[in-house]
Image (cartoon, rainbow, N blue to C red):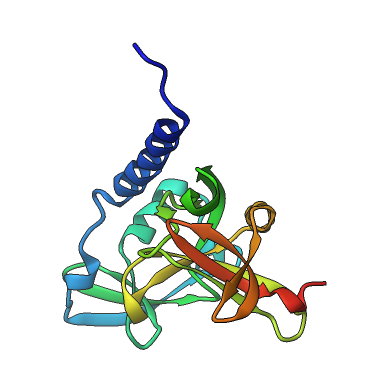
Length: 202
């Protein structure tokens, strides 16, 4: 049996990441298709750090948090709800609902693929389907990095990259000319995601 070539090894690694992404989606209920008649709000909040709180107390049971996360929907007006076929309960989300707690990498350069796993077990492979975006805090000038997890358009659910994961991402960064302007960013899935103009780097 011949040895696996470097190219085949990369292709297998990329395939593994994409299979992990599909596996994390399997079994999720079709919340975007449900239109329940009973609508109300409950005292539930997803904090900026990704913690789920009910009536002021943090929910510690991971299985319960994952259950709630599986029926979470964002509507076009930016509001978040827990949805079943018969009921829709509005909740508060301080920033975005999920935190990307780890990152895996396959390939290098233009072939590089990055997969992010969230605190509730979703896997998102950054690329055309799952974009990365970077917001700069106007006061601290610190970047807040986000990855698209599921949902489309205005209904998209995102995860903010945990600080250690963001540092890993920055280590993979490179400069690239976009429309005649030099940007610092990162590649994944054939897409170059811009973080910051190269001229603005300290």
